[in-house]
Length: 119
Image 1: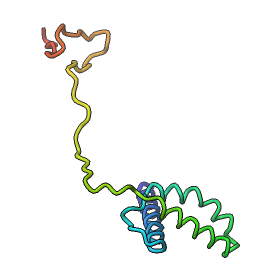
Image 2: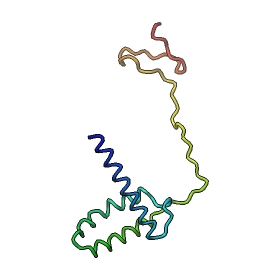
Image 3: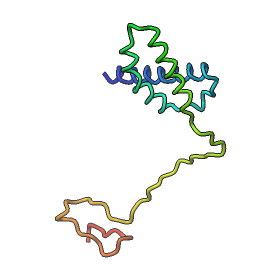
Image 4: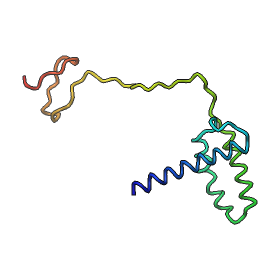
C-alpha cells in the first residue's frame, strides 16, 4: 500500500508539473517563475467545475483556458540574489535530560553542569 501511495504522489506531482508547462507554453511565461503551490491550489479549486462540465466540451475548454490563464498569472517573485542557507535555528539548552520519573529526579543546583546520578 505504501508503494501505491508513493506512486500516486508521483503521478499527482507530474500532473501539476505538466499543467504548469502547458500554462507556460500557452501564455509565454517562464516555467521557473510559475508557482507550484498556486497551480496545485488552482487545480483543486477548479476540479469540481471541470468535472461538472464533463459532457460539454466547449464549456470545459473555456474553463480550461481560464484555468491556464490563472496558473500563468500566479508567478513567483524574481529573487536573483536570494540564498537560503541550511542551519539549525534552535540551539541546545543547558538543562539536564529527564532520565528518571519526575518524582525520583533530582535537579542539580547549577544548570550548566548536570549532577552525576551516582552521588
